[in-house]
Length: 146
Image (tube, rainbow, N blue to C red; front, top):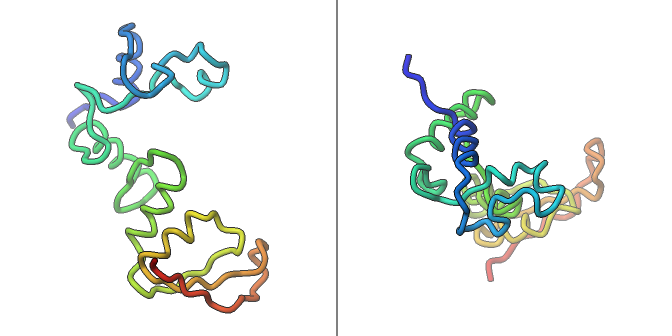
């Protein structure tokens, strides 16, 4: 069985080399700037740099990490999320919805959910409650592409 360096191992080795980061992210891997950065592992936060992979088209260490994540959760595929929950919501909708599909939403859904519906002219059935036992539905609302 072939052994691969894990993403975590590679990131910790890169952090330990002491190189000054002159690229994104803005905190420059300096987790001493604010107390919360250490808890977020900011010292391991990098962008696409030589020796690593490209998150948008992984072929090496990131691809292997995503494959391991999929295996762990029993999924066919796994994709790492960047840029916050809005990009994840948009990606999930774009990957799964077809034009005119119907979807059940909580009325209090994040606005990015409604933005994701627009290009598909999807129909959103909304619950009037955040209680999952509440089965009452409001009238469907068709999201109209602008």
